[in-house]
Amino acid sequence: MASLDHDEAEVKQEVAQAADAVRQAISSLKATAEYREPILLCYRRMCQILSESGLLIDQAETPREFAQKASEKLRIGNDAVLGLTFLFEEARYSNHEITEEKRIMAIQHLELIEKALASHVGLAA
Image 1 (cartoon, rainbow, N blue to C red):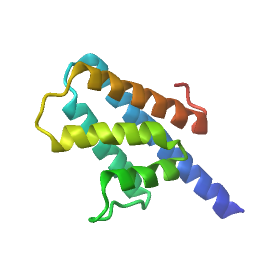
Image 2 (tube, helix red, strand yellow):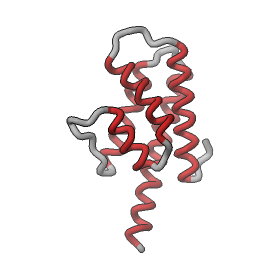
Image 3 (cartoon, rainbow, N blue to C red):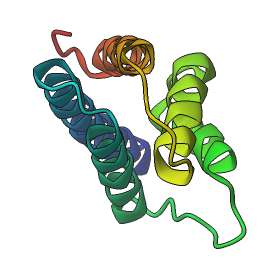
Image 4 (cartoon, rainbow, N blue to C red):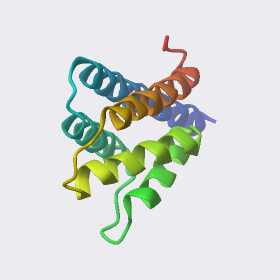
């Protein structure tokens, strides 16, 4: 039982750290018209948080596969995580202009993720 409580405490800490990274990304996206860098930074921070908890990205794993594992680990739904992952892939792997519409979509996905994370640790979203 103590191990379960310890595991639950670890998950809550990871969720709180992820929520902080999401809030930072939302602030960055709202403060600038730039899209790529805040999304890439948020993704890197999430990967760091999850790798510190033992959830590592396999070299052969796609961002979408990792997003699935991350949403399970953080106990949040897939839709917003996958939507944000699609935008991450676009920001990371394309050279075309990222539109204002995509920046707004990123904020919306991040806000949904923030709410889902907050519901797990009692944070105010």
